[in-house]
Image (cartoon, rainbow, N blue to C red; front, side, top):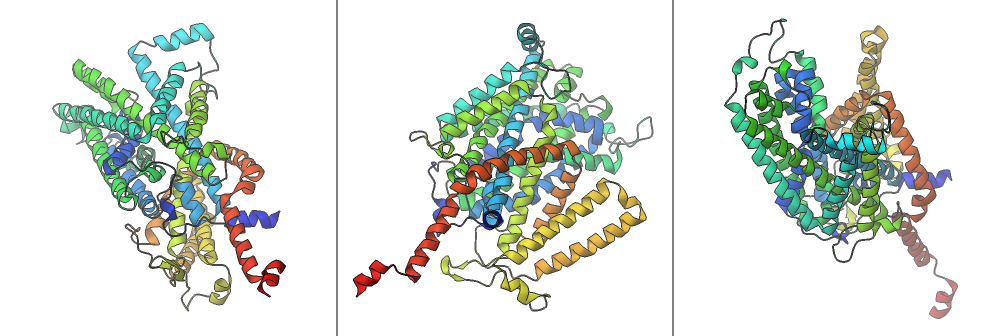
Amino acid sequence: MVTRVWKAMTRKKRFEGDSHLDTNLRRCLGLMDITFLALGQMMGAGIYVLTGTVVRNQAGPSIVFSFVLAGIAALLSAFSYAEFGARFPRAGSAYTYTYIGFGELWAFIVGWTIPLEYMIGNAAVARSWSAYFDNLLDNWVKNSTISVVGELGEPGGFFSTYPDVLSFVLICLCACVIAIGSRVSANVNTSFVVLNIVVILIVIITGMCYADITNWTGVSEDGRSNFFPYGVTGTLTGAATCFFSYIGFEVLATAGEEVKSPHRTIPVATFLSIGVIMTLYILVSSTLTLMVPYHQVHTTAPFAEAFDARGCTVVKYIISIGALIGLTNNLVTGVFALPRSVYAMADDGLLFGWLAQVNAYTKVPLNAIVVFTLINALIALIFDIEALVEFLSIGTLFAYSFVSASVLVLRFQSAPIDGDEKRMDNGGELSAWVPGRNFWESLPSGTSISVAVAGLIAAFFWLSFSFRTGIYQEWYGQVSIGVNTVVIGMIMAFILGHQQNSLKTNFKVPCVPFLPCLSLLVNVFMMSYLTAATWIRLFVWMGVGLLIYFAYGIRHSKEAKRLTTIADIRMSSTFPNKNNRIRKT
């Protein structure tokens, strides 16, 4: 059993030649299609919901810098996604990249978090859409539902106070659009993105007419800076919150099997979408904080209230429509990505095979769409999203961390020369000065760099929890941080002692290993600041996933069967059977 588990942990996915381009899905999406998919996933809640909370309670007008810092942090992870998206344009995104870099079991663990990440995100967006729409109707939907079916739970509990039928129906309607086909889904999403950008431009242009620079300058009555009312710490806290406004660029990798010319298109679309959304976030947050003093900003409907205070009723309703469009955008792209993340695992044999079946006409994984849409809609219907939404953060950061780590592992392993699998370069070879060189090179290829990356992640967690728990203020904490810094330095030196491979791709992460390591450090620090309850929920969810893997996935893994077939062929060629020997005589 131990041997079987070890093989599963170290069994990596391999693509022969151009087999990574083979797919049952239809490659029909161009550069603008997937750029707009990413924009649709990122645009919406980040502008209409998150901005007011961050301005009022965390950063004030310095939210402008918060969005810049968060964008840079997202860009660090985007580099890794862009390289993998160019090299392996597959539907699984972080799951597939971990499978290639670390092995099957780790890939399953990462992949198991991705569907939940999308389901919680979709449920949160659907409930926000429902609340926004119901607010325009003076809570008629909520009150009618409670009067008919009663209340489900207490406010702040695990279950919602009432079944949100509107969000249930909305998710199902979006799934119907997705089930028609990728081309139709992309066209619908593009239309929503264009409308949303028009609304945002109206907000910016109209809002700047009411700009008051004194909201940014000077000090308030209590002596605080108007621009940095919560200090630099508040700006950094705001950046951590704003980071999740950029979650969505990974949908590009999820759609990799449906993209035309993915080697070039995915990297360009990744950086184009992040650049556009960062610019919009900066302009929108600047407009809001110049219109209204930070302490008067409304937390849930900041722009609608700001224009209402100025007597701009028409613009207020335009913003309300824009918010619904933006949230619908979020939902359509989230529902689009969810079944594809499931399809990738099922297609590899790690989840039930019928989830990988592709409709012959629409070329979409219809079974996965139906099953996981119903689960997603039920989550939105009965669960309190605030109790689950922090879980979305840890799942995303977990996946981002493994993708960055996988870049390190793959970059320091041997690669085919000019695509010839029989000729490998010297990638992964250790320099003569590395201690224990003979020992490390006696191990299977890639072991030394995998151990180094695992040690680096552990050291980063050690460092981050030293700050999280506050022990850095004590002498023993300072000693611990000093020892940890030395350990990190030694591991980095060991990584630099490896030779990078010479594989040529359309895009490669620059400044390796420093950029992926910095991305890892940022992600680990943000994970360490999440609550203990979030970590407990993660381990519970992982436990459920591992039961499925060891009961089903490990026995149906296509990669395991492929390796067994190769081993049988080699065995038969080395030891021909008796009948073959008789025929030869």
